[in-house]
Length: 206
Image (cartoon, rainbow, N blue to C red; front, side, top):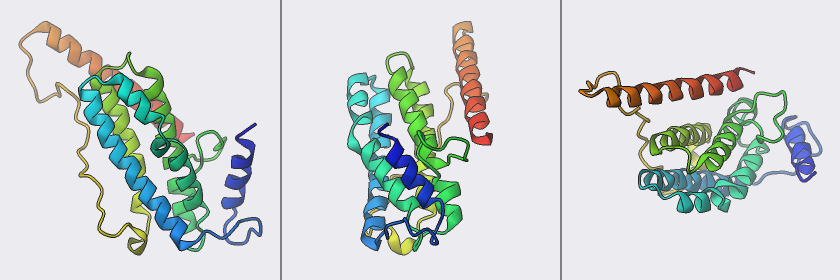
């Protein structure tokens, strides 16, 4: 039942400026929300380093910290309601809705990030580092999609996002392997990535 108020707010925010139920989102709130999205991207980069070092316990702690849970959710909710600062396409189509309340609607970047973070959290200890990095790449691209629709005057002054490095599968087609075991490992990885990508595309197309 804790999600009912969130569903109500999401429904109101989706109506736009003509909804009398929406409390006005201030410029300061928008800027604070954008700063929180920046912090979430920075946390994703920390998780990437942890994944490469097999630091599962540290990853679980960070994945459940406010920066990737409540702060992220609240920031997206405020940005979705910022009708005086963002257009409808940015609010409803790009940012979208909370994962737990998007229902039949196009979910958008927020839900993609939340779903993938939950998937990663539940799979820690079973995923190999490259699988974690693949999931984190999805999260980072979703967060960057949100930042991309924010007008420049609302971005944090003197603060830039960490450089984005696209995920590259280990043992890509350009590499040659001398041992059968390496070929098998590369094939398994490619199969996993194709399956996960297909699932993600199916969800986005619903």
